[in-house]
Image 1 (cartoon, rainbow, N blue to C red):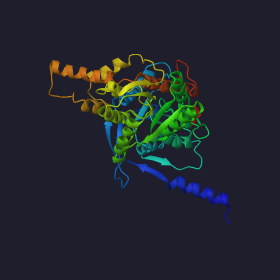
Image 2: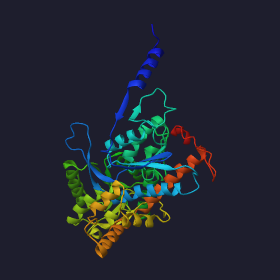
Image 3: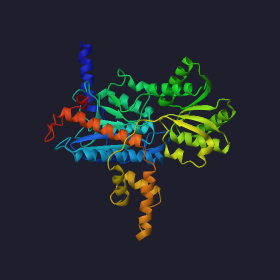
Length: 428
């Protein structure tokens, strides 16, 4: 009789030969890329929504709500990689990138992750099943993203199988600090454990003890809300109500927004603590402005520095907003890079092309001063949406990966070891 070990070994070998996820054409995925000796992956929500209503079979999703702020973060990744290539940090080595649009959706993010972990130098994109992945060589060495914690958690579970390093500059969910579950996940920001504690300290300092909590119905929102309520109980801060908003744009979302607006209007609590995506708080604020509801708002990092919110019509009527954000910084010459990107917009990438299209400023029939004015307006639109905390986070993330590669490749300022056939886990 065959031993159990022999049967398992045989099954693994069969899986390696036949169990592949094949993809000849991934053009339906929204992405930008450039070749290089070493490829860094990116998964960012360039669009804010994806239509999943009545989804009865697999297939491409329709993405909507182009997010200029995240588009700029993608450009910060491109710019930072170009800076590295023009420096002596990795002499003789060119970094490339593949940046995918998750459309703020887990399913899209999973599909993008599968593309990034497909086998290196394969004529057909394939994710092979092995018994041991210690020598597996995917097309990328590290992944930047996601932005939202809910998406980062799913990406991290996939990458953890291969121990591919993943670095996020904005996912703050406390669970991601658990190294037993997410051994290859890193981030350039603190977890929500620190943010929710800071919120409690602010509330105590201002002698408030009666609040409400509103969160997004995802891993980030629920985790942050639970953390806040736990801290609140310890410090005798009472919570009038807490509620969750659905992530996807649907009839349920609209109904929940209306219900939440009514709760806020009827609540005797004057302080609203929020852990909500900027797109969702925008919808809520528009309704509350119509209802003439005025409260004090404590904003988490998810929307505290959102230009969409700060420029919302009649936003001053919503009340006082106190926000928490990450430490920011400036990327040298980045604004000049963005200006050139818009002013000389020939042969641009797909994301830039869409930006130029949606701002309705790209018109080939326009000439002279009128065209120049339109180009300037496009740049002003970009400049107004730069979130320096996030763009600087992207810059730090790329430099963290670069320095890990320097150690791995034994680089000095003249040369590096050019053996690129190493599995990603070795740079951790």
